[in-house]
Length: 349
Ligand SMILES: CC(C)(COP(=O)(O)OP(=O)(O)OC[C@H]1O[C@@H](n2cnc3c(N)ncnc32)[C@H](O)[C@@H]1OP(=O)(O)O)[C@@H](O)C(=O)NCCC(=O)NCCSC(=O)C[C@](C)(O)C(=O)O
Ligand SMILES: [Mg+2]
Figure (cartoon, rainbow, N blue to C red):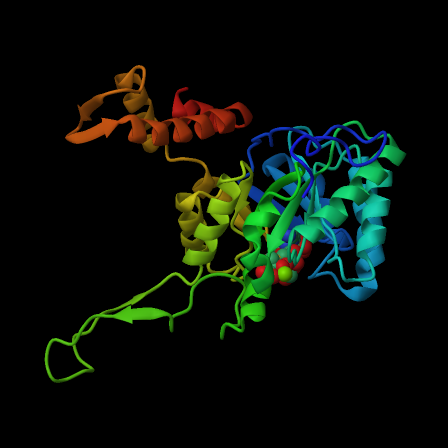
């Protein structure tokens, strides 16, 4: 670990000074596209207007023979597109692959001034972030980049999960962490075959009411990801960075996707990945607070004045702690309203 005084110093001469605080920009969905797929690439300028984050994926889901085309495709798209308020991210190949080094060298050199965040897959511990941190600083200095590129880790191995707190604290570049449920399930030897979501076999069953063990016993499906997401949220919140749910692979099951996203939202995640255009609106709906919750939050904050004491609103006790939750809700609503005129009207802020 660097000493506390050195933590915010650049890691290469001429690199930009690291940010002290991670800016909270609306981040309801990270929309993945394959820059080597001409049909997807053609949609990027339009999709970029609708999403908070657009991400050129270079890692898994890109065929090996297309790895270099994807890298070059992202460079071309980034140079040709004006992204406005929408963030441009990439997911580089994993650090143990033959492509990761060239991914970083090419992208920072060619489009480093447009790239907001580099997502690093299969992060195992702080050492992976330190490697990327130093390399980014060297490349930023060489390319004359003036704004530091941030780093996002995917939590998708049991070792990474074990080290999640040190990963979150590893660098001032750490912007956030996403859950990678498919690789994580494989790494843990979970007996699932899905990309995120629940499993009907993971359940609890009501106690028997008589001698017949097979009758009258309601079962309730449980959330396979509760522990993982909750731990990731704590690691992120404890280090002032942002947690995200990852992908939901059952594209057709828009109902379960919405449920999974909402669970993550309620537990503290700021957004999720959209793998297909149909998931963009689901993320937008779920990760934008309900106008009724925003109205309630406004009422509580106004009634609480300086935040001390306790008041009764609609039969419920409100105090300092519920007021703080309402402030979290209002701050998010205000940030989203600035980006989205429809939400600004719905929230009446
Ligand atoms: C699932 C797939 C194959 C279905 O693609 P499709 O073409 O079969 O679907 P479609 O419904 O027929 O598509 C309709 C139209 O939308 C387009 N389209 C479709 N998707 C997109 C998109 N994302 N962005 C922009 N456009 C898109 C598509 O090209 C088509 O265009 P057309 O009308 O002109 O013919 C496709 O959506 C896709 O490849 N999505 C991205 C997959 C991806 O990035 N996976 C990696 C992230 S998940 C992961 O890595 C796991 C993790 C974290 O690592 C871990 O848990 O371990
Ligand atoms: Mg993965």
